[in-house]
Length: 161
Image 1 (cartoon, rainbow, N blue to C red):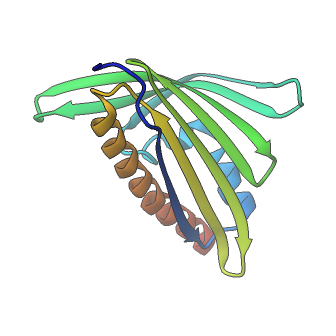
Image 2 (image 1 turned 90 degrees about the vertical axis):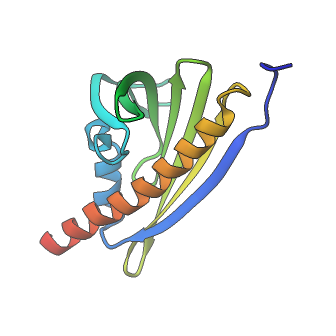
């Protein structure tokens, strides 16, 4: 069966930045911050902020992922993102719905450390069997890039604060 259920993709990325939890949370809770924070995200639009039944801040938006194949072909993948502030100032949960039945959840936990903030991102995803290897590779590459870029951005903020 080519298109049957596949095991969930799951991994954790943990790193330290030298900015405060508040600075990191403020940055990550703004959808526009993800432009360039992920090497694939080139645009964000249709941002809507609301509250859910539990009073949590919910940010719905569309992010545009740009894929390049063989340096000649370009594909812009519009993905729907719902980001929920599950613990104000400490945790964000983003659910991503992408075409081709790819689903991803990223749970970001922020913890104050003596020298800044520990960022832990737990990613789980599902994808059809034919896309699983591609999705796994892309998700891991993006997580590693995001850790390096957020560290760069936040360490620069700490120096200018």
